[in-house]
Length: 231
Ligand code: DHB
Ligand code: MG
Image (cartoon, rainbow, N blue to C red; front, side, top):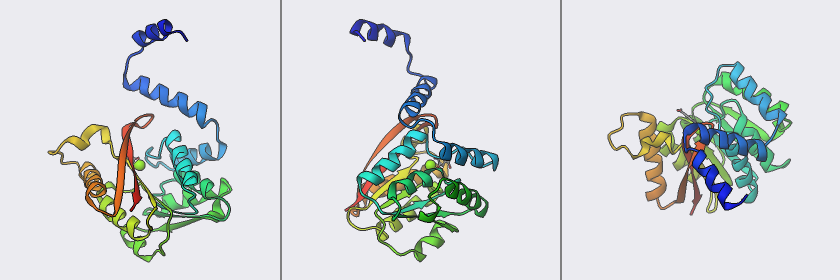
């Protein structure tokens, strides 16, 4: 495309939420594409009436790539929901790898179990039903990557356990750090935003972590994730 054409196109395009969503869908189409197992997992989740809060397709693929790039073989996920991100992670660890995933709701765990099995990665995935704060102390450590995507109010508890169950070099991904920009509001009363801010502050101040955070704008709206390493 010539600069003139690009410039004219830029004049026509507007930076709006629907343009961001369209661009996200374009990227997902191009780089993720059709994936029957993942689409069936989402259909089962919708059918069961779970909230539509799983990671976006491009974010699921990012998790998969981060796990592969870091050579992760043991992954811990906090917040299974319908198993969408679990499948992405289970694919990354390979046939000898293992994903332990914690889900508070037994009904969600049953749907996730079926979708993960149908995706052909069931033998790599261990679903533990219970609240994170109760399940985490029962786990054996040595995780290479921890994905935290559960109740935001418990983010600092989950980060503490991620450090304890990890080792220097363990990768941590913390979901939902943007929250429509609410994180900058000191006067917020939303417990999810407060929990998100506390998680971010812990990543910044606790010497066990080195972290950054990226905002995302797309199918799930304006949000983001933090990426950290255990020092
Ligand atoms: C919420 C939780 C999530 O994990 C997410 O990705 C989006 C929203 C929520 O509880 O509001
Ligand atoms: Mg999330």
